[in-house]
Image (cartoon, rainbow, N blue to C red; front, side, top):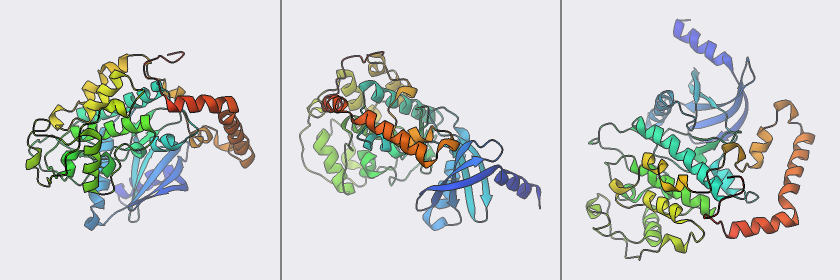
Length: 364
């Protein structure tokens, strides 16, 4: 056994796979632990050797960029090892994602909570962009949530560097509902603005509790965007009619954001609108977003530890030895009782109907 194989075997022994927790086309994710400390980790097992589907490049990118990015709002890559034909990425274990939290209707979001999630997203993204890395697949289920409430950007399989502004890139990136119009029109030259559009869609989704721009096809996605934000003119977005896949979509009037986001403050709507500007060069940057008045007005962002948690996070916060059926059932029942008392139901309903973004929350 040569030195490389020996080192790989030693790394492999360090980690123990316990239970499969997710599976995609190219990878299986396991909950695991460090053998010596029992620290929980996630082990992402990727099949390699399938160049036809671009899998190897995806795996290489994820390893490359996560090795470069060390930030509290970016998932941490702890180790990498191979086993047979599989590449294994050992990542810090995170209990849930923002999509799970958005869909959990037992949870009530205060304006300060949304502000906190947005601040952490922009912090992580600004760090990526400062290091010349585009994520290119930001969406709620790629924003993972730790047990202490910290949000971390994950899944860098579509990420790439953008140091050379004249280099062509594919437009077939970013999940459709979060894909900006320049990519839908086939632009091959783009930069950080594509990620910021995605964050704007996530921002809107946090307020609406449902995806904001949900198209059924690429063409329908453009129609959905234009119905919501108005059909762009040459004045709004110079040169967009010259993009490779441009087709006229129809004329839709611009609807004020206030009509849909009725309870949002002026600062909230201003930041949202700056994330969803048609002209990519005029879209706000992650750095400028962090300095926007929205983050400095009341209510101040919730501390991550005070953010709403879904049931998966609450159970994950228990020590492993406590996770027997009786304990977990008791804990879940107490949680359900707390969330379903008649007086709380009335309060939740009122808050859900009208999130008042202008008043500070108690303790802010």
